[in-house]
Image (cartoon, rainbow, N blue to C red; front, side):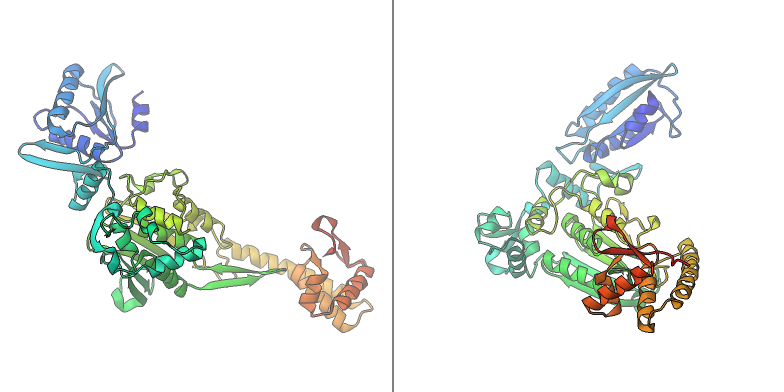
Length: 489
């Protein structure tokens, strides 16, 4: 029973006994749980999860309820349940995530709000306290009115994107319906962040391409760097452009096309940067979004952790509900076609990476967050590979495959050398075999492209090599498809 309780607790603390003389030792966790995503306190269990038991669980339960009522304000929602394990009594205090934040510990002449960082309850920093105050008022930063007049700012980038995405010009009334302007002609913070010359100065993007795997050499070792300010649309476009400028794209030819293998999946970069700009915490003054590119990876770091207070590295990426810190900005970006309102950014980042031709399991995108920051790490898909995009055991397999094919090629060349065909035709047949081997079907169009023949000449050549039993039709691949077979002796 106790294991089930512990397993179901998202956040939890263990207290071997109820501390009555110094109740702050556990009441601060009550404050932190109510200010975050909720949590559970276990009384009568030590930190090693050994059940010690309480001497008088009934009296302890009455004391817990009384102290929460006296010292936590506003009064949080909680459930206090007695449990028995192997004849020992314990108490399970489950605190719900609160809506009337912040929840303060108020006693001993102090008033403090707490949050969870890791497995500790700590005093909320000023910017987090501001977040909690806005949450308690059911307000968000981006919806607040700014001091800036709408008439003093231009929105050419916003209008340009809206026109390109919807096909319509952006009418003045849309600034009101998008909650970018209030009834008195003032910009909301969302409007200020989307103005061409955004007046919120800590809305900036710093980009650096480092030489190596870390920053140990300082800016001296930076191969490229840039700082951008202005509308969020400008930051997004410039950030994506910086990454494209500092990455390479390999490619390899296949039978019918060529496969591009970029260092980074552009879709993943785009989604990660959109998330960083839209969901960042703008209450952390003097902060900005950073893109850091190293030889083997790219990181995008934004101010503020998960909006619900959880840690992304402890969550299932494929099943995270949308909690939007800046819903007005998210809505505008949704209307501009930059993001979906369902909040599927994390899933898109990982799925796009997995679909890359040169993806390997060890290159899975990584997500990390704490109370003050969020970071996405995208790995260089080409780092440590050769020009063909293969690494490690793949090189051995490729080499073996290449040796086997060379043997087949020599045998095939020997067989066609004895046929009554002119040299140009034999060369064309050999070129076809080198491209398609015995396994890949090809058509007359492939012969035309590869051998540079006219359609009629390509048809005659196919008829000729068919007479010598070098190819056979492949009906399941569609009409006009052929495959090489071993020549008859």
